[in-house]
Length: 117
Image 1 (cartoon, one colour):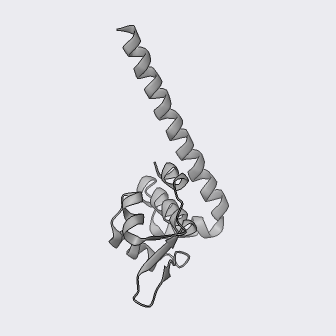
Image 2: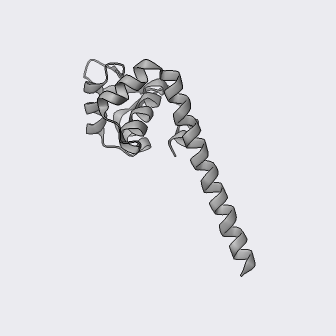
């Protein structure tokens, strides 16, 4: 789901509301994560409005994946990403691609079952 959302990114910067909607998390959760992860620092203007780059969104995806889906502590997530960000991103990408493949296979099976009826 998130990988598909990332493929559709065309703007250079996104508001916190847009990112929250895209990734189905609350804006307050994004602000909280900013306070917990020193490497997640979206740009802000003089009013304090946040602007997330595509790289910021990728970091949020990693945080959400490891914290929400894998159940890691925020400290564990931070350590994993800081230790080897590239490896963490690859692990996430492979997992998302496998999930998409699984969904495609389920759809094919459903179509085949319809043909049998």
